[in-house]
Amino acid sequence: MMASNLTLLHCQVVDEDLQLSLAELCRACGAEHEVVVQLVQHGVLQPQGSAPTAWTFSGTSLERARVALRLLHDLELNLPGAALAVELLDEIARLQRELQTLGGGARNG
Image (cartoon, rainbow, N blue to C red; front, top):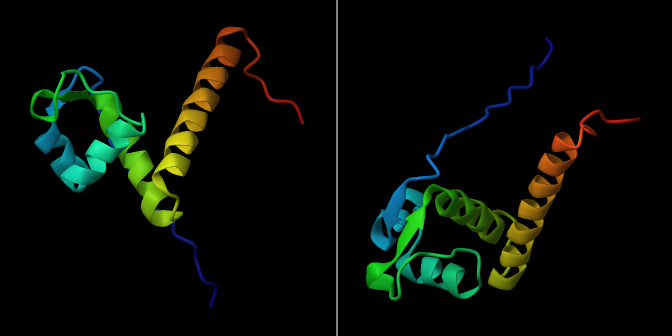
């Protein structure tokens, strides 16, 4: 009998205009308060507001937090490493969008 490979994909569309408090972001990510504060300190997240009690996060921050947390847990990166990886992933996405805009979307090879 042939074995079949099954790939499950999980996708969630997040509204970029969404505004979350620190507590809401923690719940949405399943992260501890201290970890989210450290993500802010390392530049992964950039909340609006002057203090943690007043911070609000966008839908984009929710996705960045989830990516950083996966890097921390799945690849066992430290916080600076996860922060760098998130920045590099963002830069790759930006360059791909720019390439599409310039009409170079077709891949060679």
